[in-house]
Length: 231
Ligand code: SAH
Image (cartoon, rainbow, N blue to C red; front, top):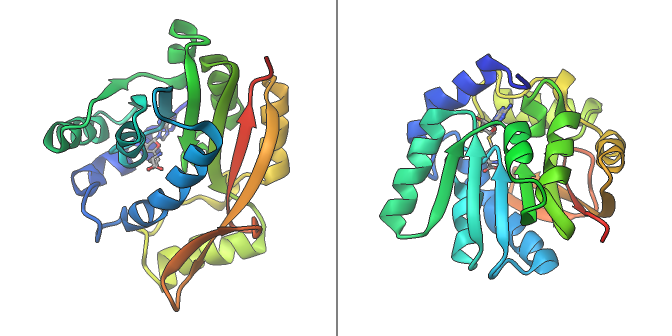
């Protein structure tokens, strides 16, 4: 299977704190409004059938459902999915969560989604190209696919590993493995090989002094890629 058991375990151990905005998941809470608006501006989520691959505790999934999307979240961490499910019940937002690999979901529900999202997940899997392919299979012709991950270069190592895990201690040590980071051109190659087209690339930066995240043209560390499946 295209999953690293240690990665799944890492997220499962922290899962009970997923919705605590001061926890290890604080960065996901803080970037969520930015990525949600970026996705919504490009894909007009209301009424759309959406699948979120590697949804974890459902921060993005639930927020897309709040925008009116018919949202499904999939992950391989049972604990994270249970937390996601409980949270959606508590907040009264309708979301469907399922423990299933992206590739298996693609075989079962090919071409059924208007929008596919896969955020902060590709850098945790052995074969990210296969996840991109599954995303491309899940989306309808004309539909949108959104990815986010971490670039691979000395600055990304300094900011995403040394800075975030060791200096600022925003993330637990060992959260990210530099060798698994993916450059935008590598991701674009996976995307094109899967039959998708690249529509836009956006950078995301964190200012440790103001503690503010922003979307901009600086793709050197964190970035998002907007794609679509041609009609
Ligand atoms: N996408 C969410 C969570 C990111 S954390 C967000 O951005 O808010 C990374 C998630 O990827 C975790 O929930 C982890 O369990 C999941 N994950 C890691 N490897 C996976 C795999 N091979 N298949 C499915 N999910 C995976």
